Image 1 (cartoon, rainbow, N blue to C red):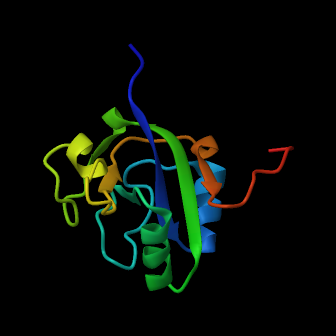
Image 2 (cartoon, rainbow, N blue to C red; image 1 turned 90 degrees about the horizontal axis):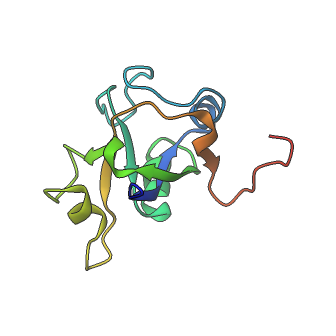
Length: 122
């Protein structure tokens, strides 16, 4: 059986986005963001518009898309999540953005700027 995956979004600055697209992400590898989140997590949302709000809070309009993230690498955001499980958090029947955190390292190839196609040479 294939593991369930999801496409998620991360609002950030252009500098941080470039680092993620070059190096990927691993726990405790980045300083906490402007919202003082925990360094052991990368904070993600199910809606690009929600990620844009977080980017705007950082004075930016940069949104990263992370495709095919396995559910096993995620947990409900301890600060902003409302579901008891990942399935509950990302499957809101009311269309509310799900708030989750990445808990395991992910390769640079997983990240791309939302709405901007990757160059063919990448």
